[in-house]
Amino acid sequence: MNKKDSSLPAASICTGIIGFLLISLYNLLITLLLNFLRSRVAAETIPYIIIAVIVVMIGLSLAAIICGSIDLSKINRGMSSKKGRLFDIMGIALGSVSFLASAILMLGQILLLS
Image 1: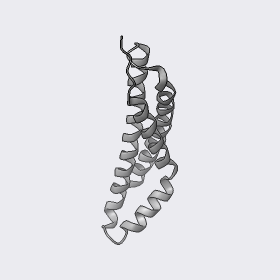
Image 2: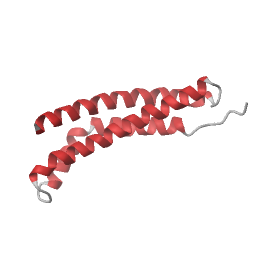
Image 3: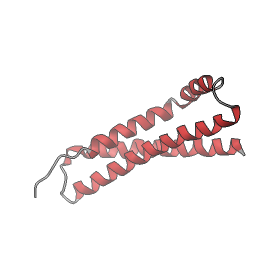
């Protein structure tokens, strides 16, 4: 069987890191976004824009988890090189932390809207 290197570990770790950084910098990001948007859009649309930013964070987190999981299953079946195993695990871990934090932020934002 020909083992191939996969781009999934790189995708997993990159999306995990980006999602984690966005969550870590959430307050700064939202402050900058609010200062930029206040004079440009109606005040009632700002919470929905914040929800859209959080949805992007959730999407990046899910991409990290999915890419890492797919590659780990390929490694376990012998269809992929074991070189990316650590990146897969780190991507899944960062994606999971980012997903949980994003979900909490989303719930908080939705509760503020109601």
